[in-house]
Image 1 (cartoon, one colour):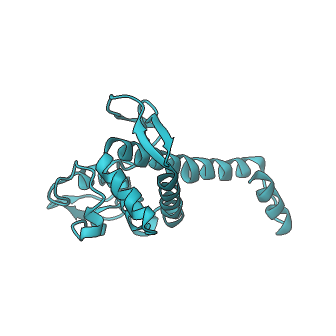
Image 2: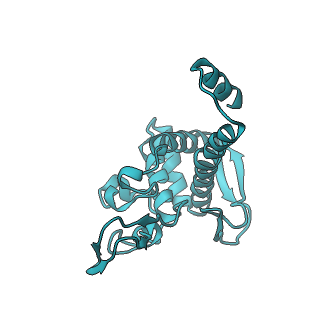
Image 3: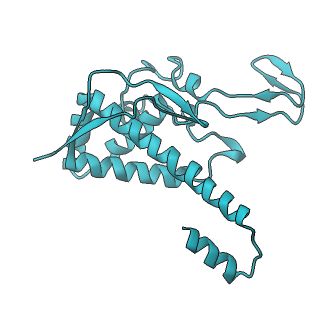
Amino acid sequence: MLSTLVRRYAQVGAATQDGELRDQLITLLLAGHETTATALAWCLYLLARNPQAQRALHASLDAGRTDYAAAVVTEALRVRPVIANVARRLREPTVVGGRLLPAGVAVLPSISLVHLDDGNHPLARKFRPERWLEGAGEQGMVFPFGGGPRRCLGAPFAVAELNLAVAEIGRRFEIAPADGKPEKAKMRHITQVPARGALIRLTART
């Protein structure tokens, strides 16, 4: 990736400093790799802890369908969003929740609270990928990549990667938890990662 960036800068005749290249690489690593890898870890952990959902995934994939794999990804991003909230600074006075907030105030819409509200998603704390196939889930109430003009630019690519990875792993493996302890989330930089690494065991499907 570094070589590609250097060649591209040279092709367009752009002067660059090492600091600029470093910033580009950090953006790719933090925003384009760590977040997607963390989301995949949560997907596999939740499948390992929910055998019924895993059986439904296997049945769907064996039938040549990938809709359930996509539902697994959406549901995992809902239950365990990688980013807990997004910050915005108001440019002008704005009414939020019936309160008038002055310009300059920072507001943090909570992704986790919206995702885990039973008013938005029945049995919100339960991992049920089926909700996205039954029409019970509302896509507008799931925003793991933020929203508006500052929504994550890599969201479509990340979802495509996750859908593909979950489908391929589901086709090849049975997924089991490494131990009986539940996995809590901890903050690393700005992401919510599995506190103990979300260890799982994979066994080849016969």
